[in-house]
Image (cartoon, rainbow, N blue to C red; front, top):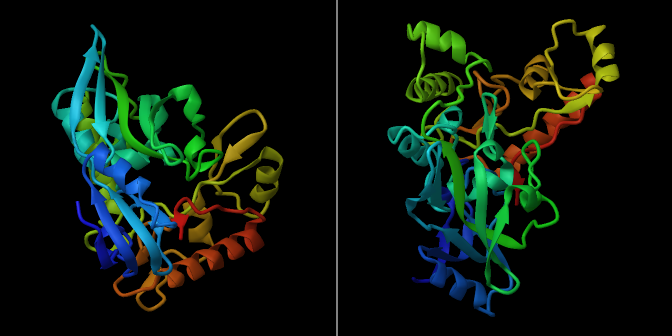
Length: 337
């Protein structure tokens, strides 16, 4: 383990923003991580995983700690379920593929989501009708205060839509080092009724889909809509889908009769942020070397050489416009530094 100086973070964030870390270290085991966190000379630290949910807008003059803990193992199983532990530095999509190759069900709808396992619970990542909390058993964390390991169960994580305790009262207090998933071994509960999964399976001429088929369908759909961060810098969906009152939604229908919604509870609905952004005229709009993706309005992109401050300025313009047109506030899903 070596602490490096003046390192570009461009390879460590999916937006491909070129900012400089004054100090940088990559940790591959718990002991090294504990040691780094105990160093007194670095008062400012940035914990970085897969870099898929962060927008870097400036250089960082402290220590960037890259979490690169690897390993996947079965820790227990019974007749119906298997409990799989994945370390924080494992790539999320590669973990999903590992599960599918072993016929472990539950994460197939979450295929091709960028990022690492360790950051998945923070955001309670989700796609196509499935959220991380649906397969979550527990996670191990290290406390930044006392450098001790402890375990959070599902209830303690306080999961909500794209939210968890790690984004709220426990923000900045812990580093997730591993996650345990509860997955099905057979009789998988298949979720094909969200988005265009069913129609994609029809196009694939599949009548009785397996978890492998669902994963392939999701990958095909995502690749058709979302840019690969290796080709165009992005962080996936930049904004959360806003939740508004049914009363507000009915009022919007007077002027926007095609505005879609999804029920949340008896009094609220969720409105797709992508629809709002598209109908505000931003879809495919280019501002030089950055802009809004032409196929998915939720995705802000860096075509090459853009600054994080450029992306941030665009996001604020979008938020201001959506508020003016629809009287809806949309929140950024990514962390902004």
